[in-house]
Image (cartoon, rainbow, N blue to C red; front, side, top):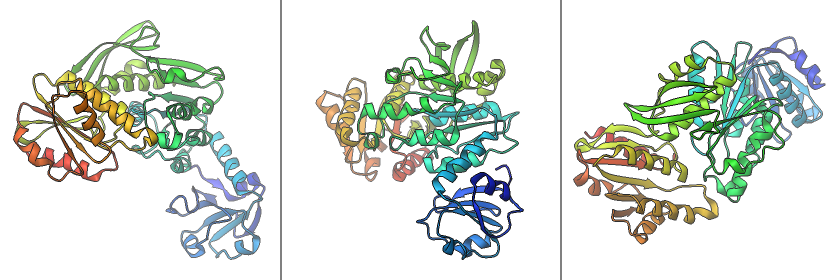
Length: 462
């Protein structure tokens, strides 16, 4: 955080100094009881309903408390704590955010989409970070409550920022955009996920579309040219530049001659009447789309395209994202346990179609969560998708995933199909069929520690 003088903060918020000194500088800011108090010289927004631990705050002093609690309660502060009372904490919080974000005239990229958010974000950061100071959200930790601390990570040394939007419910992206005020927004794709928080697919699309209104006036919106659900978003009110990426002729960043290569994908990039050879680590056509979105974003910042492509080739693909390993009996294990939704399953199956050669395909699939009332429907659709493919063995784990097995059987799948409540007992099925002619994909929800551990055990047992 860029240090701010307490006196200047009080003036900005038109607050009243209740106690303590205002002649020192704040170096961190949190919302009390929502974020951890880790640092000295911290500002804390404290709501009326919060119970204040004055001893804890004082130990981290000097500290600044901003609150609309009654003055009698605020006067209980200890010597190392400065207290400023404001009329409305909510208004003061947003006024502070508006002021702080306004201190920095830098490109700020935010990304939403059903799949590819974290990878695209990390690609952008990787391309820029060699000679720029980049503030970014951590891994896929994208919950709205993290947005304020991420914003506070921007300081006078920051050259650019890139953040991933979390979507648990409608309104989340709108809230995050009010904090980040992005100059560039990306929608990677819109599949099916979080229907429990958005009621249905239409609600989910509307929730993703909140990024369109959230981009600063005159900013840039980067969209997947081929994604059906993204096309349903109205752009009539958008006052900025729209850039499309994809494989079709109308894409501003277009890929052609896509090929699988050693540990990644090769393709030709067509942009601004020029053609470039590109290599991106990580398998799958979806990875090419992630790369196109990242290249479009850095180009919108004015970054040299040749240099960006060179740096992209050294990107280290994320763990548990279609990671290939040697396993039991010389088998090939594909660990894709990072996330689980219909879009990512379809992408994984496309990769297997491309690399399986004459191997026996084994699928281990866990529950798909957060589908609300559409849980059965989408598990069934996956079962139907699998039934059309040449699968040797299908194993499902969990009550919801049983629907995949039932539908695959109903649709005439010739796979050997097994259902399990958990990972226990699966090895009895796998041990006899894991050999150098087997390729096994394991895919389950990020929250399933047991499936992650099981995937790791398959890699270790060689």
